[in-house]
Image (tube, rainbow, N blue to C red; front, side, top):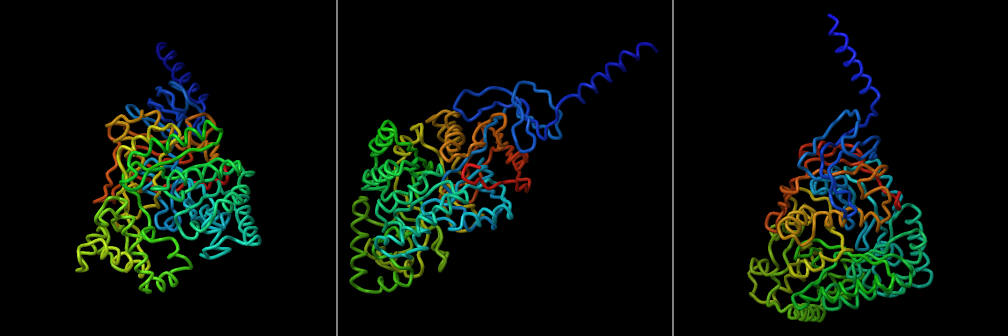
Length: 524
């Protein structure tokens, strides 16, 4: 009988030790931790409590309601997508599945000059809606300009510029992360550099960023880069050049020239970084195929101009000239993603649509097909015009981030660019695992701490005690983008667990329905 007393004492001691251990909400065990700094991985455990990372270490002693065995898996900070266009799709899929299944826990909205004008009201609405992802937002120059000047093709008056400055200042006070421009879109294309500088100077004291879709990503790309750098230099503001690329076959190989410009600017002391999507096709409106001056003053004005024979002749001539510069005979590189008046166009090139309409198989008739579509409100399209060599060369640049340039995708709607589903998984699968263009640690740094630092998301982007518990657990051997140009609607795979602000949002590869995202207001 006496031998039972030591056993009872041992049981009591174990119970006391367990009682004395600190508690956490989630305990991640045995993971290969890549902490976002770019440093080598290490094995360890992570304790999460109250939405924060509580502790990191080897065999840490915590009681937990939920334990995740991350053996054989990589544990990393949640990815931050710095260039998105989620506006309008937030309440269509609050689960934000196209981002969550790609490892993204935070997005920056308001890019390319397009944003909600009232940032405070937008953030309040998001707080009540509750998404599965965190959201920061820029204030868009195009929408600011439209609110004051409409789509007018002229410089602002002093009074108009002051009103724009007031709108930008209000947005920054309400939590905007910075100012964005879309200088190929109406009315942004009508703004001169001094107008942008004046607005960027308003943003700078708030620790904001200037993020730009430049005036050209093709033939005049170096002029556009110089303009972006000049704005940063004169406004004394950090610069982010969006979806850095070379468009058009005639510009293939120029990435060595353009990346060198960024390197030289950083040596000069300009805080400039870039982002890219890892594909050889872009996506935007077919309106970009037309001359800027035809697109002023709204759809009614556009339609009225395009009905005039002399304007049609001018537009066709301009489009054919651009096509010739691309060294192409047809508009086969432009593939319609979504055309509301006739969804049978979706997924077909302008060349194919032209033939569907029974027109002659030549570029002039294809230009007329584009004009017809513009008369009916336009369409979104995917443009195949970049080289794989440039994509990889840009990717090797250490101050380049990865961004989807996408909305929250709605399954089976249209024929969108696959980047909206697979940007991060594609980098990890194709460019890290298969082609070894960059290392896994470096890719994760570009997806986490680099964007967090750039956009002043001060508690994100690192696996570090006290940071927000945005954490992903994935299988580096199985992570894969499944979305293609032919079949774009497919979620990425390989992300086994995703935590957003400490709550498990993906469990064993399945969205839990958790909507624990927050609005991130000017770094807060």
